[in-house]
Length: 250
Image 1: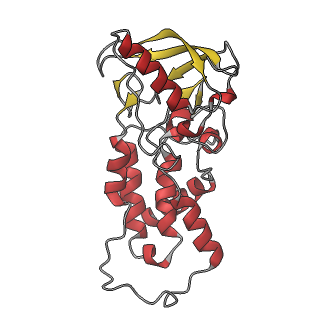
Image 2: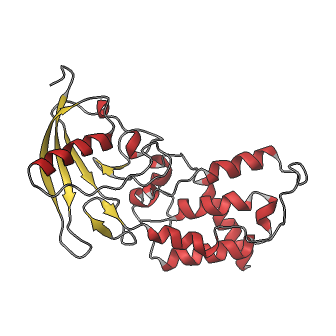
Image 3: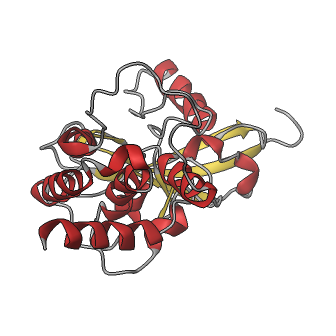
């Protein structure tokens, strides 16, 4: 055992399937190094469970670099855990004390059914994107970069919105399970640029209708979504989405 290794007590949500009942199950894990990422700690736990002949905890992950957003977990009641502007995979075990109890749950929302344990089905976001989160105008070959003037402030704000990785922490943190931050970010990244204005009205109506059809709640300006977003997407985008929607329907 390394001299700086810690022991953590884990309460992890176990659920065998979408229709099965779930519960928090306790585990104790020793020899956890502070340099480990949170997902590496769960890998260590799963290796231990496999050796013991126990079903490992199902988790979602891919890049493990804070880029893809698939690793989302609720850690001690906070989507993605204690670190601001970071995804679950970027959380290090140095953020926790020796002997601390850590509660680990999936992102909870009616629109994100649990597949197994900590894995949820976030296909609702894909359907919102498919409803209008794209530019379909045939522009031919790529134009010269300076052919369409774009104000720097608009370009920067559009890029900030486009940095959304669709992790769904905003939904998990919102008391209404609203997808407004995600949807508004995807609307804003096009609404601010001339290339996206041609379809702006149709886009916002289709995406908002798709969001409502998926059963997400309404935004009531709690701001929890912005607080947990690993890319720090601003709630000003929600205001822009509302303005774009009103312009489109009126």
